[in-house]
Image (cartoon, rainbow, N blue to C red; front, top):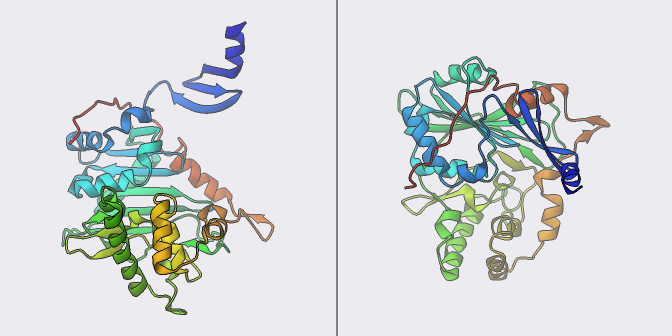
Length: 340
């Protein structure tokens, strides 16, 4: 009786070439039996970057790998070894890859994604990141200039030419001109082991940089909307002590209150520090207003009575975030390596 009741709550059945896991009748995970390439995140998370470096060091120049979550996809080449190790580590970890990875795959050379990116590899591109939004897919890629050997970062859309533009105030802005990769440490990493007093001094300097460098054109007491994504992971401190904002992919169509920057940087991770900084700058606590009106997750799914999710976008979703773009698949076995 107990086993029968348990089977109604939880089941794990083979269906063709897959094993399907269901809880209370809801399918929660599907495993490919033939390739067995879904690696549990508990194994990957401990030393994911060291593991990637082992594979990259031993792979062929034309091998490509992908890391995939539900809404992010990284395609990685051996050329990533040219990147600073810490940058490569931070670039993946800060994207929440470590917390959500359910797939690490060597792309088959007959797969759609391999054929698409091998030609781009020949143009000097090393690493590609795809992020799924509501009605488009954002693509950021890192490349090396063949003449200067400098590393650059670009971003763009992956969608049909006549995609619907969102009327929401938070919009994705592709970086048509490439921006140079800057070496440094993120402010979030820099302050994590500091005392509260040291944190306040650093945040104070960062805010002075923001308020002086990114004044809004319509109101010098506000901040430009291009600084919308101003969390601490998007600011670098370089060796010369200078701050750099590095992520302009999201933009607000309105200028931003100074209090918004403090909220976005500190409210969730450092609530005590958040209150102290507001008091220091005599700024109002408007976190409820910001959460309601400045969330990227509140973009409309219907505009003018029509869904913004087009058939073309659904096809692209299947290509980058389903199995369509990567099959047939290769088996990759996870092997622990020593952490640095």
